[in-house]
Picture: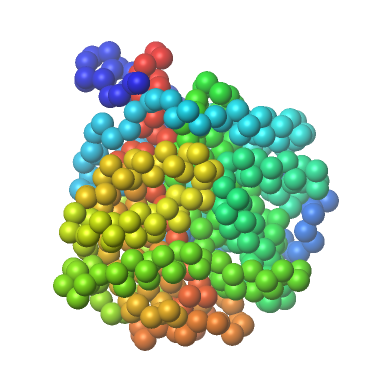
Length: 440
């Protein structure tokens, strides 16, 4: 097992080497023009609305909200990422290089097979250095310019290989959730005339950092409207954060399939908050209403300073702590089963220092915001106001007066979620630093 080594001149040099290399290798990924689009696209919607605003920033389209690089947020260069902290100071010695005894062989093979199925041009467009700025260039917004290979531009065989890769990286629930978000994105597009390329099932992109390997660091990113999965692999260790998932609407019928999203996150959150005593609720709940965009740790917030708020885990009963673990497990559970359990073991070690924070009411159909925050995990759930969907929402709007551009108050028909690994864990950055220290 390799933990943090003492700060000797040798390790200081290796860390400087890492940061300088990242600065030299990094590009301006977030500002570049999207590549890989061909004329034989698998989806036929017009591309007239797929551009982004000046400077590579989001178009402000239906994605919007806290998950996009909106006002006050911008891409952090990979070499400058410290991670989410409470006060700007990284808590040391939280992560180490070790064996998890959970094989990544099938995952590596699936990634290699997908890449081998691409043309030379496609492969060139989606493969970057392990420390590329492309890691931090993700966004939730539909019209954001993206690099990589676009699923809608691939052949059916290539797309199936992409889905197979996701199937090895994610749990069955994680794959179903991801595909469901993609389908409801197309449902949203169809409900608004079907003429936006960004609102289709195919407007999602793969990029790869490094080369798939069972021994060397590598990773991939899969993103589009309401999905951003950042997946880092080192040996048999995996980090799947930051991962953003959301949807507007959260219910709909697409090609005959009835899709309902975010029920587990909603019900587990309600079960947790309802288990509290009156005194505990007073600690956890800051307000009986939530705003329209309360998410703090969305895209562009890789160095967010966010203090602990709410009710501390050490003030919970053992039964309440189990409910809190159940809640965290919903989000961690979108990772493949073996690595999800590894992450949950890490979460349990810091359970007493885990905080629950809540804004909003606690009825079945309430719109609310909650946050679970510890040294090793940060989760946010944010029910927002409609931006683009014109259909009838199944949830009752919140009593909050904060409305959205689409009109109305926050409801469960527009939800954003994110999970992060604070203190340098996101994108596997701390593990990569340790790897470089020990191998150079």
